[in-house]
Amino acid sequence: MVSFDHREPGTDPDAWTAVLPSATAAPLDLDGVAAVLVVAPHPDDETLGAGGLIATAAEAGLPVHVVLVTRGEGSHPDSPTATPAELADRRAAEFRAALGTLHPAVTWTVLDVPDVGLREQPDTLRDALDARLAGTDGRTMLVAPWRGDGHRDHRVAGEVAAAVASGNPDVVLLAYPVWAWHWDDPTAPVLPVAGLRPLLLTGAVLDRKRRALDAHASQVRPLSPAPGDEAVVDDRHARHHLRTEEWFVTVPPPGPATPPSSRSRESFDAHYDRKPEGWDFDGSWYEQRKRAVTLAALPRQRWRSALELGCATGVLTDALTERADDVLGTDIAAAPLERARRRAPRARFVQAALPAEWPDGRWDLVVMSEVGYYLSPADLDATIDHVLATLDDDGVLVACHWRHPDDDAVTDGDTVDAHLTARWPRPVLVRHVEEDFVLSVLPGPAVPSVARAEGLVR
Figure (cartoon, rainbow, N blue to C red):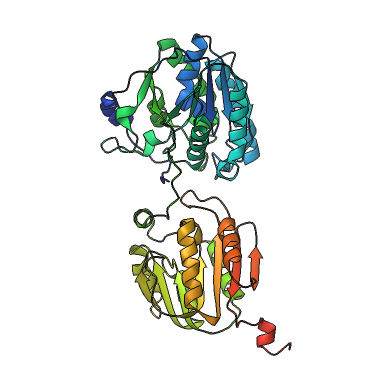
C-alpha cells in the first residue's frame, strides 16, 4: 500500500497533461449499456472519479445507482471543530446534493461501513453489489476505485468489485483513480497510462461535475482556519479531476488468487527514509505504556538470552537489557539498526528478514512486538516453527500487536494472536486484550506460574 499525505502539494496536474496523450485505448462510450453501477468508498469519490460518467449517463437517459460504502467520517481526524459523527452527517448530505447535480434521477444505497473499515467487512459491499446486479436487466457498467490507488478502502472496494464482476458476462468493469493522480510519478507511473480509456466530457457535463464537486464543501474548502481543518481536495488536487475527459482503467478478469506475501524490505527502507525514528517510540504515551505492559507481563525477573524480532530503533531492546544477560535484536531494515546500536550498546543486533534469515542460538525469551501482521500466513507459520525449535523449555514467547487498521499490514493483530495461540502447543500464560492492542505470553513446557515459582503455592 502506498503511503501519501493529502496535505502535501503532490504531483503537478500539468505533469499528467504531458503524458496522458500517450494513452492508446479507445475512448469510452455507453453504447449497449443498460445501467451504470458506481462504487464510492467515501462521499466525493463518486464525483472525483466518475462524476462525468454519471452525468453522461443522465444525458443518455440511463439509470445510475451509486453504492456509498462509508460516510467518510474520518476525513479530518485532527479537526478541533467537527466530530466524526458531525462529519458523517454533513458528508452524507453533500453526497446527496452532488448526486442530484450530476443526475436528477440517480438512486443510491448507503452501507454505513466505518471509514477505513471495509477490509473488515467486505461482504457488506459484495452482498449489496450482488443484490443490485441481480435486479438489473441488460449489460451493466460497474465502476469502482482502482485497486492501486493507495487508500485501503479504495483497494478493497476495487477487489470486491472485481470478484463480483468475475464470470458475469453482463458486467463490464472499469476502475477510476483518485489519489494516484496525487502521489504517482508521471515519468515512471504505477498507473497503467498506456491502457487508460478516456470518457470525453461535453462542456455541460463538465459543468455539472464542477458544481457537484463544489457541493462537497467539507472536502474542497477548509472547515475552519484552525490546523486540522484544511481542505482535503484543494484546488490543485481538483484540477486532476476537472479535465475535459475522465480516465478509467479497464480491469481484466481476475486470475487465480495469489497468496499474500510478507511486507518487503524495500517498503520498510522507504518508511525509515521518511521517518528515521520509525513510529515515535520515544514520544508516544501509547508506545511508552505498551512497553511497560509488555515488560510487566514477563513472568520472570531475569532472563539468560532474549531475542527481539523486529526491534526497529531499539527502544524496547534497551529495556530488555535491564532484564536479560544477553539480548539480540533483529530487523529487516538497516537504517533503524544504526540507531538501535547507539541506543542499546549492551545489546547485539543483526539485520535479518524473517523467517528465512533466522539467527543462530537458543533463547529463554522471544519478543514479537508489532511484527506478526507484516508476515504472510506461510512466513508467520515458519516463524512460529523457528521459535518453538529454538526456545528453551523454561522460555516464553511474548507477542504484542496493534488491533487497529494498518494499511501496510498483510493481516491484523487479532488474526495473528489467534493464530499464535492456536498453533502453540500449550495454554497461554498471560493474555491481555484492550481496544488498542492484544498481548499474549506463550510458555514453554517448564514454565510455572509466578506464584508457584516464588514458592507461594505448591
